[in-house]
Image (cartoon, rainbow, N blue to C red; front, side, top):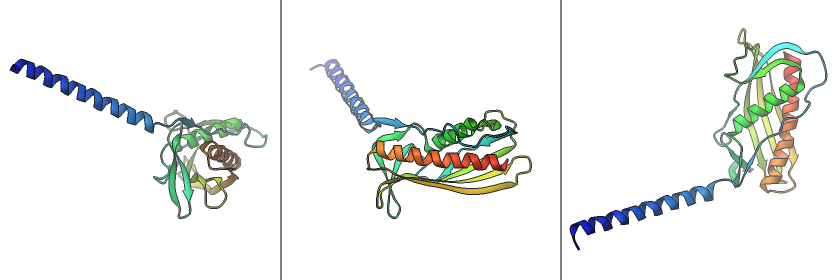
Length: 204
């Protein structure tokens, strides 16, 4: 075989090897991609009727432990030990999902002049800072969706804390599938968001 023919055969072999590696990589990506993405619904009405308040509230991105600070849907056993549903995920990072849920809940009350996120260009009066302490399917005992959020309301004009509060809700899941888990967490989150919104409105 000539040197030219040998070189051509080597190039063909390398090309086939590269295509095989690429195909394997794409197959691996496809096998690990979630089959379903879930969001959180905001309550339609979260506070009693009343006069609209002439204030604007900024909702910061919630803080969270690294175990919760992702798009993975957490399952918690005793310890706590964190695992995740393999073929399901939140539609975004959990902090972003929760932030959006809080903003929409506050907007749905129609009690504030404005509600927004960092970068929205609001001239804000108050800042709502939160920490996600629990947002999971807890399977120690009966399976249940658990949502716990610590909140702090800060006067943006002087930097002083107006008040702080922890909100928590648990809802029976009725099973341990991803659909059952998300349904229970959605209900629990709705309760927490509604209580949180009512609390904010009572403080501003």
